[in-house]
Amino acid sequence: MRRSLALVLMGLALAPAAASAQRADTAAVLKVLDGFTAALRAKDSLGMRALLHEQARFTLLRPAQGGGVRVMILDAATFPRLTSDPKGPIYDEPIRNAKVTIDGDLATVWAEYQVRIEGKVSHCGYDAFDLVRSTGGWKILNVSDTFRREGCGAMW
Image (cartoon, rainbow, N blue to C red; front, side, top):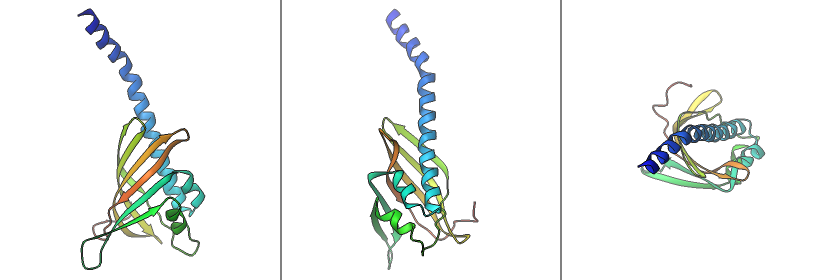
């Protein structure tokens, strides 16, 4: 009985430290995503690559001609190259309502996004991010998204 009480008390004493670490990890994960969207908006391919794991991939779901879904997969070098083309549009892709889940060295984030091009909403949907913690901090490992042109609302 004494031993059980001691274990319960020890657990209660450690709970605030665990909660604080979770908040710090959540903030660090969101900082990576903020940095990535800022680099995307700035067409900064090196800035994007710095926040990507070397094995990162982008799984983009797009409407298929004739119905259904088309799956496009881009690697860690291709996405930054395509989105930082000086002749291409500027992609402004803020996220909101992010739900962050972390277990050990894996973080997942589910967030609503809006892509704006030349001050107008192009499309919207949800991003699913997977991040991995390594010696260099949190890095984006995978980005998957949904896509729709309707129901995106005004810019937020």
